[in-house]
Amino acid sequence: MTSTERPALSFCDIAKSYGATCAVDGVSLEIPRGQFVALVGASGSGKSTLLKTVNRLVEPSSGRVLFDEPYVAEMPLPSLRRRIGYVFQSIGLFPHMSVAENIAIGPRLAGERLASGRIDELLELVELPSEMAGRMPDALSGGQRQRVGVARALAGSPELLLMDEPFGALDPVTRDALGERVRALHAELGLTTILVTHDMAEALLLADRVLVMDAGRIVADELPEALVAGEGGEIAQSLVAVPRHQAERLKELSK
Figure: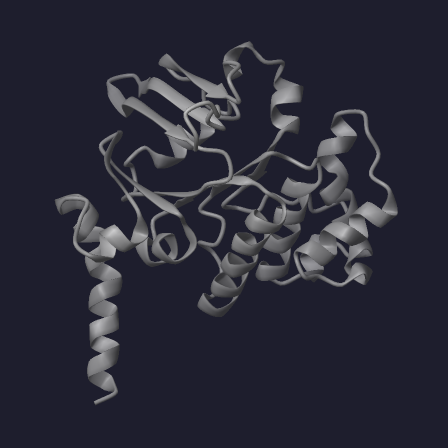
């Protein structure tokens, strides 16, 4: 990012408490336009809460989020969310709607209608055949449903893609394939992407930058290669140790 270019997203001393529990504790950081960021941490570290302050699913107790300079709290909610794609952990497809209707729901709620050609285009982006448009969610596999979830998130041509543990319920092969496709779409569509995950291997393989959270704070902000080289501190390295140990065990099996 050049000195004159605005960041895509800025968190300014964001805090969020639920009663006596502090979920996010004074987070400040900037995310440049076009970056793919992974937000990693143990359960309860605050990563999903921080992510949701961007599209105002969570309102911070204090601090402000800036999206391309305006404060998100001062933007009309429909126009804010029109510019942000959001992929849920639980997929969240409406069971009584077809694939096409699920993909088109965001624009429809904004008073717009997607052309059938646009539905086909979105299905192609997530590597699903166009004939799936008429199917119901219960006729799809878990991986196919999550691909529809990604297509739905992209339906409004967003600038920013937020993903909250999107691959957690998928089998390893499907998870790996969909992760690679999302990374490719990030580049193809010129997105800025934030991926929340508890899987450090996934973060290292997909992201340009890895943010590690613990007890509501960012405790490491590193490039993947720096984390692999041992940087980032004790908490970050405890997360890196898991895929490293798995790789070492696999290496032992091959001897």
